Length: 264
Image (cartoon, rainbow, N blue to C red; front, side):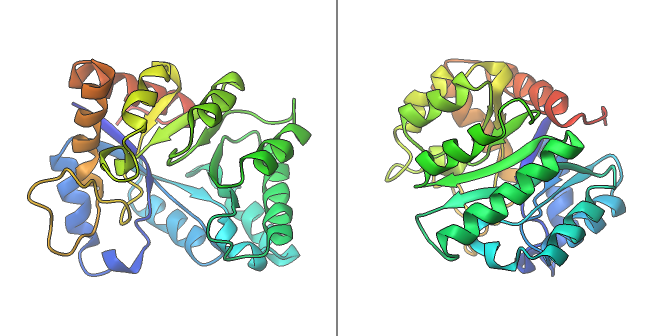
């Protein structure tokens, strides 16, 4: 079973002491490639550096998460554009809107989102999108760029049936994480994933966040890492009524086509 993690925050400081071991455990679990999430001015260059240190295995996104939207200045925009000149950077983002936390003012979030959509429009690169409790504004801003954008994935989907079908109606891709395994918040996803076409479905850990609650025994440190992608793939396959090897193969093929990744 070959897997690709489309969203791993491997530049997070919780990995600083054992990053090489984390990568090896992922390989041992069948994770053959990973896309390292760049979500701020600080971490997007680090994601690129990590990808460059592991050619053909790690790739990167470059962007500014809505939590950090206030840092999206003209200088930041220039930095993002410079990062996107590198072939290891395979998507624009993580970008979008987050009205659940509101760590940045909403006008700043919308402006940073629009600036990054402009980069995607100009480069033709796929979008790695974040949306939480901001669906109406999120869809409105995306519509302003109709006909100008390429592929898009709404990563770490946790939303409603209505939101899911709005995305699928736009031919966007959907990223599923270990949220699926959370009996408190993610139970609805077990039914919704049945409706996602195989050629629109990808999987991710969002490590070090969102450790699947059904992993037994749970690690004492509670840190998620890419090796648990195999667990998510098996849970997803069960919910979709598929063999795990089929679900994994479909997700891997979809991911490779979406990001334009080479075979390992």
